Image 1 (tube, rainbow, N blue to C red):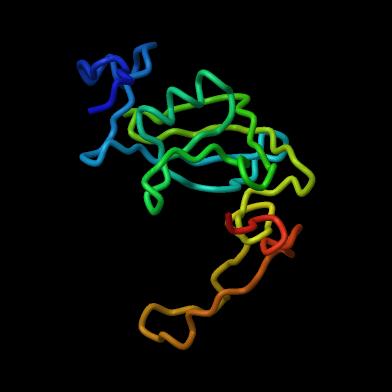
Image 2: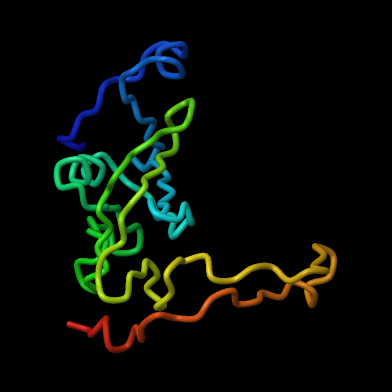
Length: 155
């Protein structure tokens, strides 16, 4: 049980049109979070937050997520130096998704652990069809900004 308590969800009208943050965490205690570069509007990553990481984000103004694979808080940039400073937090109409606008900092000004500015560095090629697996090709839309092997040294 989390010791970080956000306001209880109330009536639909208050959730959708009210002025109190009432985040809807899923059965695992998580809420999806879309992260955009505040200067460009580019979506740079997607991750999950739990109540603790959301509270930490609000307290520090540094984007903090919940790592599902590592089962721990993850302050973006704690290892790479590419910190995300939160400039604005939004929620959707029914408060089950968060959107944060961040200022990317650090030498590489990148979000992706693979070295790219954005985690969304590939797109589906034209002509792709769901009934033709061979046509489901991804094309790179960006170049890496840093070498992950030099940034993420195993401890």
